[in-house]
Image (cartoon, rainbow, N blue to C red; front, side):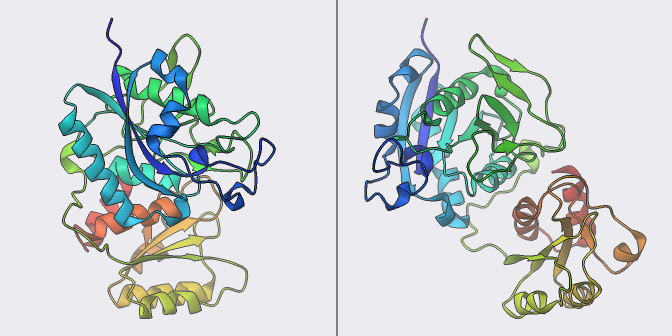
Length: 333
């Protein structure tokens, strides 16, 4: 029986990094050794041939701290070109550094034009590290991308034998292997040795016809994030507004309240046409909408963390500045 065909698009990151030796699992960026290219990464995991016909697609060899809007648009183009070259493709895996992995995955979930599986994976230990998680995560991601049950779930994140919805997952630990978690809802599936065990499907997902087309948008609307701290004075908000921010996400105190001074500055921003979304710094749970904030024009991020709220607000502002329309997107996407 022919194996499913899966493309692996390499962007760099820890999963493709090489340390100075097997015990170098922390300072490997200083090793001087190059990040593996996509074909080198695939060749280094021979077990991939047992689960799929894998096509390596080079894209970038960088840390994910260097990834942003331009790279996201480039990934969409690379996925489209790979699919055009391989009409029988079952799915796509994007290998990625873990720092911004969740933001890239959520962006893809909001912009991919159809329901073909796209899985983002990474690693906590470099490819050369003792007991590295890189090969197993890559094999698991390829298996999930090839699985017909992965269709229609949006972009997925696969690490540590768990499958997560891009909207729900976040990095929770700097170094532990079980870092990617969905605090409110848990995993969608587990990647077991004999099968992929599916438990639930995400409901907060835009249908393909309503996703964002960013092919012609080289520069997104500027959206910044402020972080509430005791005694916060609103200076950052006014600085972002002066820098041209069209949107601001506030990582407010749980359940979604900034300091009085921050609230004043954010209200000023709303008065100048800036979209302001209240998220929380808690790491879990909704930013509850309230009458007093709603009357001033504040929007709620629902349970999106600040970095994901920023991604959605950037995309929303490419389509509309209408408060009600943005609010509706945050309730659905």
